[in-house]
Amino acid sequence: MVQGYDYRPEISGNSMNTDKVDRYNVAQMDLFKNKVFLENRNKVKLDNNEFMNLTIQDIYNNIMNLIPNLYNDYHKKYLEVSLKNTDKFISDNIIVKETIMSMIFNNKNIVYLGIVIIFISFFLYMINL
Image 1 (spheres, one colour):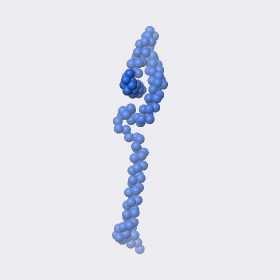
Image 2 (cartoon, helix red, strand yellow):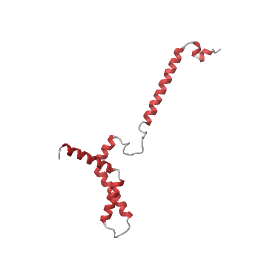
Image 3 (cartoon, one colour):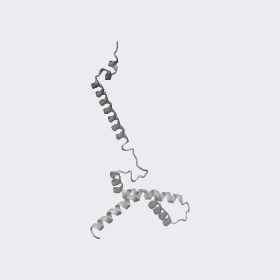
Image 4 (cartoon, one colour):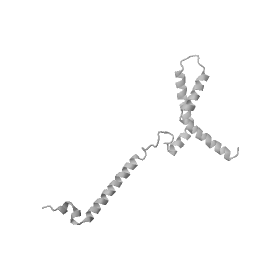
């Protein structure tokens, strides 16, 4: 016959087994919390600002590739503007002007160009030019 203390060790007074079970449960919960935290650590976004969610390495890579990125973006915008304007008598100066305006106001690489200009002005200030 099965006694009540076989299933419920706290009745028998053997609290050593319950302590082990409690510690094991706490360890399992900590392991689960750490796993969930590590999985969701990189997924957390504080806001929708694309620039503020970049790492320093991403910013550095974007600054180092600034010239090719600006050229590619300019070429894409130039093709967009030239295809948008169907007038065959429009001058190339107007297309270039609209492309540059579109680049300045709608391009994310302009931020990196601003960072480079700030660094250059800081270094020129430091050497008193």
